[in-house]
Image 1 (spheres, helix red, strand yellow):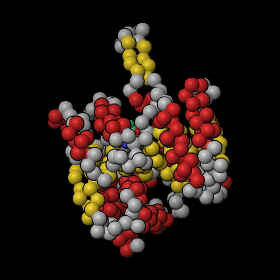
Image 2 (cartoon, protein in one colour):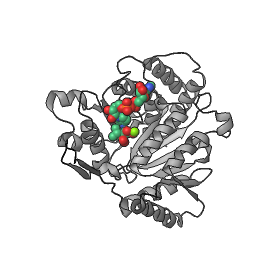
Image 3 (cartoon, helix red, strand yellow):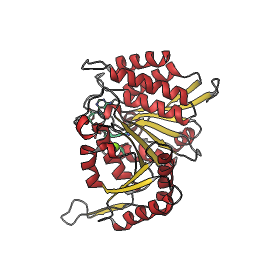
Image 4 (spheres, helix red, strand yellow):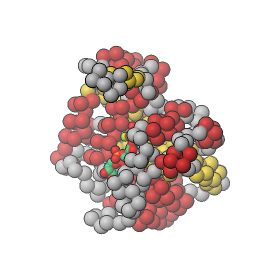
Length: 352
Ligand SMILES: NC(=O)c1ccc[n+]([C@@H]2O[C@H](COP(=O)([O-])OP(=O)(O)OC[C@H]3O[C@@H](n4cnc5c(N)ncnc54)[C@H](O)[C@@H]3O)[C@@H](O)[C@H]2O)c1
Ligand SMILES: CC(C)[C@H](C(=O)O)[C@@H](O)C(=O)O
Ligand SMILES: [Mg+2]
């Protein structure tokens, strides 16, 4: 339980595309539910700033971010900026510099939410799992290069970096999460039939760390087969642990089968709490619907719940989850704007 008088120093990066639209609703719900004094600092980062100044993430801003209790991010990325510039130099830089080694992505099918799957047939007991995605290694480290660019002899490499240290801390975190859940089951997703060096490190680490968690059962699936199971038998998963890239891909699929990307929340977490963790929807800036009030803010609102939970305000997080669950149960086919969804959830959360 939290001290209701506490101040939460929150850094807000609304970002690009639908980012500002969904963040506004996330903050609306936060204000409706929390008794903490929220001191917000808004950071103008993303495409607008890059065009205006050429800056992505100045060192001084990164330093300021460190002084907050948590960060709320909307989305980064814009078609007018070369692909990868904002993603790498802004978003990934924050995740790496703040050592967000756990990218936590719950996938839960809420009652009343329609899935493209025939859930009654393929997941009669429901879908409720969490992906523990490694957040600071894998092919995301920028370890690679290109030679003879633009020629017929062009060569490009993108090396996946996996350290025992990085894999072990992720796997241990995933086991610990599995231990708190009813089914206590951990599945490693990898591709050790082909990616032998990294795959065997992950497999051995799961075997070894698993000795510390005898009550957690373990399973393994090659990531390609896992996409089959996510579509045909998603109820089999409880906690998934996987590397950075596989985790990115399977969490978009996980979102799709649990009602859509507009509902999928995430946390970039530093479990050691040496830096502020950052919470954001799994989705991107959705340039195709930006500025139209069509974006579903639910993923951001659920990310705010994860943020509150992380800050020890579990009761407030639960109130948001309950308000979202009630809203989802009653949604039907009605088309509502981004702010109408936010208003409804904020009102329910305030009462809860
Ligand atoms: N964490 C992030 O900031 C993040 C995550 C993913 C992608 N991106 C970036 O976003 C940009 C667009 O990427 P993309 O198109 O591949 O992925 P995207 O997630 O932005 O969009 C994929 C599809 O989902 C829809 N969608 C996304 N969020 C929605 C919401 N809240 N409500 C309703 N529909 C929603 C979009 O309209 C689109 O059809 C790229 O620059 C990409 O690099 C950023
Ligand atoms: C935009 C990109 C760097 C990011 C990722 O790959 O992690 C996104 O796809 C996500 O899922 O948060
Ligand atoms: Mg992604």
